[in-house]
Image 1 (spheres, rainbow, N blue to C red):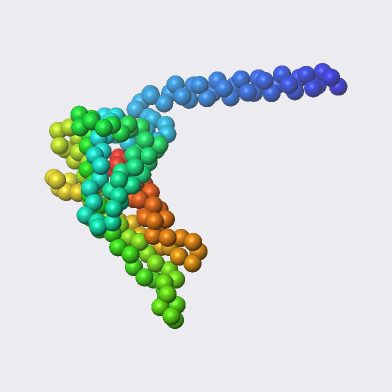
Image 2: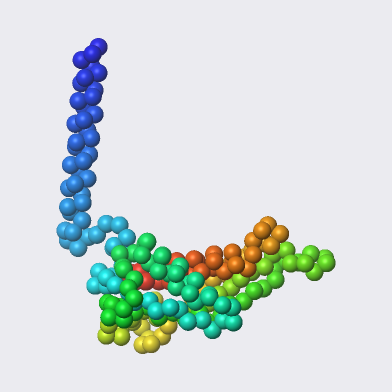
Length: 187
């Protein structure tokens, strides 16, 4: 009885050793024939750094540009192989301008109290390399100097404890995610 337990333990070690060997072989093959594993295959390999100046805002509401800048830096650094730097001599420059923000009533009570509202934001985005060539192309025929328009709407319910500030933050995080996704390679 003791020998079968010993054989099983030895077999488990052999299996885990074979699994480790297989994993090492797979990671060594990732560079062969141009294949890449993970999120690196979604992004340009010739770009390593991104310069992102503080996003300018045409809104009368304060600090929306700064909040979007923070959300975008966090999203790019967590989910892409790119590093956001503070100097304009980076491999690329990501320019954004917050164009519009609006609050709209969706549902109200019989006494005209707001039940559900919607917060909307739109941003123009342009991503270029050092030579000024656009990197964010969503069509077969790129238009020089054209910016990508990104918009986001977020609904919130004041009675549930949500506010304009929570809706704005959620909108900034969603905008950052949309901009990061637009930075992926066009298949």
